[in-house]
Image (cartoon, rainbow, N blue to C red; front, side, top):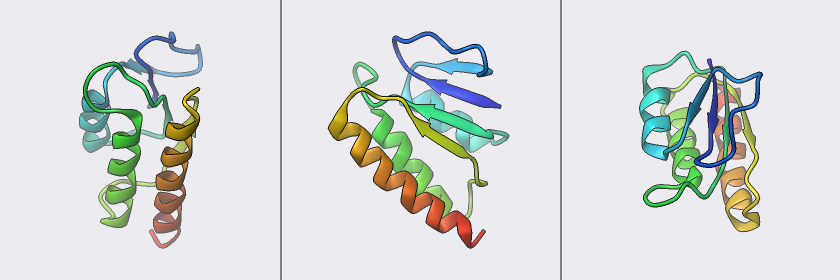
Length: 97
């Protein structure tokens, strides 16, 4: 399953599901079966895409989330950088999967 996480931009045709909040993204990641997630940072009120990236990093470290493709499509430069650091660390943990 390919997830598009964004509260405003519509889902591209090559994705399966459009999620608008970090909370629903994290719940979906916990269920499993995600092969790709594309992250936006600013998601309105509440958690951000960075919170999702930190969840992915922690779950990769704990070996509770299978390796997947992660892309970042956020226009927020600082948020993008922070998410990229978390995802790079997740990829490092996945190398030892």
